[in-house]
Length: 455
Image 1: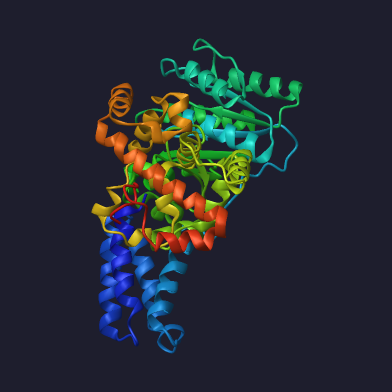
Image 2 (image 1 turned 180 degrees about the vertical axis):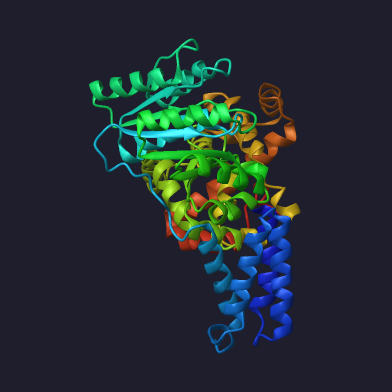
């Protein structure tokens, strides 16, 4: 998300940083660029106007003009105002109530309510150690109940069965009674959506809210609808006491207008971002970290948290011990590293959080392709155990066989073998002199043939 906005703002900020002093002219030019960038990102016009007015007021004040580095200070002002627009701090779910805590999911059809319900169940189980019951009150959409049941099985949450011939309110009451009887911590209720807001839909959601008395009423909205997402959330909020918003499909939204508009228009916080199709692809929304990403400064805190959650520490320790004992880094080890990277969202997911990556030109970013990781794993899987343990034995005929078995070209196999040699050299440097020596060996460049080569 925010690719286009980040590129525009990074270019503007790069010009600002070198300014020894700020004048009325270069402040005006900078704000014009920022305004155009926000409008192109489909941020709502009233939000853009308020944002620019506040930045202008602070930019022409003593805080910036008397600073020793006014360019840097103005960048901080822009950062602070982005954080303010999106909500200051992360708003966590309110689960400090007598169990079961009920979470009601609302939104239009196709916004991703059902998938988000399962993602939220997984997050609550893994990070908060809560037991979760999923129940579907969507009796209109074909296979909606079956979809939630399948997802509940995938995330290992309990599922409350329901049928299309039941009434939504009756399903909700029975699910709540079941959760109380089983001493379940959280109940997530997936409600029906429509293609547009109508009176019948709103009345049904209001009845469910009255019966369940949820501690959280989350509005699920597709970020790719831009500022329309904020307007839809505003209409829902007038009929239903929303407590927060889940923005879905943010991995496909290059503009980010919804994230920057929705808090100002609805007054409700964004609580989570859906960042992919998998059930693990749900992130708590931190305005300060997102602002840092927008300005191309990365998001190291989220990267560290993600590594803590998703990297297999036992495998890391095992590889470290193996390398420290002077054993060779083989293809099985290489495959493990690739799989760990995919678990953390692939190369594109990592790049989004690394400082300075926002300043890369768009054509350089397009070179990073997560499909390459899958192709590399497929090539390694096509090798025999002997070949994975001793890659040096892979010569002409073996390379052709591996390429045919993985559906790739011989040059793809050659490239992978070169990458492995580079990785092996890096690991050897680490075993002999630590990370500093390894980085000196790299001389600031990506290994030859790696997905980052050429950047």
